[in-house]
Length: 119
Length: 159
Image 1 (cartoon, helix red, strand yellow):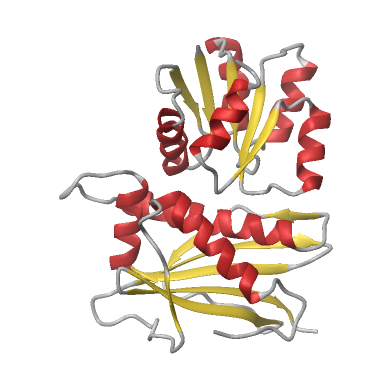
Image 2 (cartoon, rainbow over the protein chains, first blue to last red; image 1 turned 90 degrees about the horizontal axis):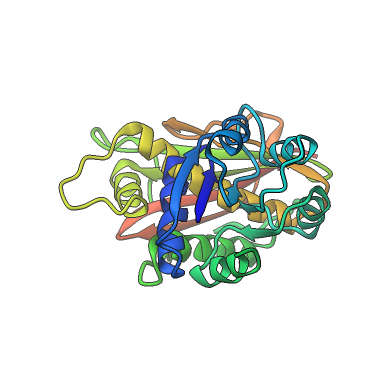
């Protein structure tokens, strides 16, 4: 399985990769994007099986990336990993087609639960 | 610590958020020690203070700031990146790490307050945080991590 991780923070991308490993999902291929625009392009070139994306990013944010993916016909499973976990944000994520929203700070268990819903 | 007279999160909520972020980023064994008497954050002749902030705009408006010295910032970055002993911490990684720290705290503060609102991208600088004259400190707590002082504060528009 190939997972695309989109976050403008290199530190956070490393933490997400480490948490995936701690959650028992360390065997996947990982590709990384620094913003939503790069993630959008990489979905076409890398054909990931899952996108894990931050919400708040420069160039293109996560929700605009998801909307652009769905508008282009892509149905790649897409989950947010974001510091904003309010009901309003969860509702916006779900209505845009996100499979889940993991709020920071997160635990390996939260990742495992979320990934099991799409694997 | 300061209690707020303005529309801001409760002090206990900010403490809880900071603790949760700390444990998630650094590990359960790493904790913040709350300081009843704040330590000097001005920085000494060799210790630079770093500050990171995010702003929240919308139904509720405010700025969330974290300030800490270079010693704490370097240790925090090394821990977040799981660097080995002796591995150097680049300024870009340090800025990235403490920016993500304040982003998480700010995002959680946003979730505690009435919405809708927007969270800005984090701003990080070497030096104390400066706030405009039309804002006021609504909430602050001082803590120590590995003996180094760290300040968390929330500023809101002056009413």
